[in-house]
Image 1 (spheres, rainbow, N blue to C red):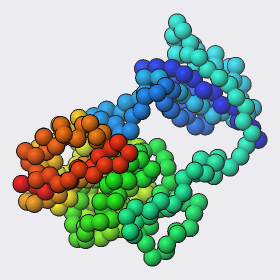
Image 2 (cartoon, one colour):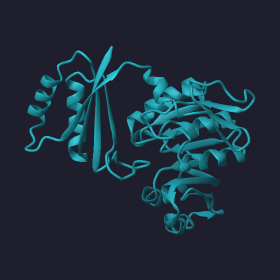
Image 3 (cartoon, one colour):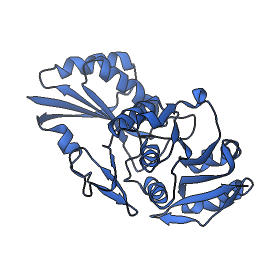
Image 4 (cartoon, rainbow, N blue to C red):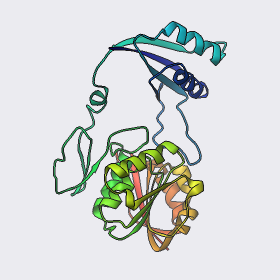
Length: 292
């Protein structure tokens, strides 16, 4: 069996509609990728942004009439200038194994590991999180996630109530649960992140310790620890709210911050927290503090 791949290069404004049309006209999978030099590591609160130059990649069964499909997409997209595209025939293969080829077990600190499903744990006595890359952010491969995982490995969270704000794949909440946290509230603006968090919690046998919410449905309750791996601007906007979500002397751990943004974020958080040393990795920082 073979497949036909259509790859469009278009603007963020057109990408979502084009993606919907490809699904409507037979695509078995559609992926949105960065099409220029712009990077978006985590979505700002209240937004689900796309790259200004976006690749929309659709995979169709090999016997589908792509000429008819393109005609229908053109008709419904109704643009004066139809986006540039490439058409490629691809022979069948084990897509999942190709997808996971470069994603291998990773260690964080002394005892915490992320293990993709294609592998056995390197250390069966370690704290192993079973996780594959997916639609939501957060597999440990990005420095911001790695910084937070290393912090969790180094600090005792046994019996604590934890908030994972901007949970993505749920990796931080799952790590906290496996390290002994009592209850984790996982919050994200993206429904896909909620779906991913729920699925990954089940996969790691910690679903009874993790409840996931969109922000509007989050029943706010005081926690011992709040983890937020998002972006600098929403972190600054949420500083006072984060303080309100924590118990007296509760801790906050923040990432998704570039080195040059650290002082601005610290200036805001020092109003509510005694902030500890800045930890850096590959141009990104993690900030930590205790509620005043």
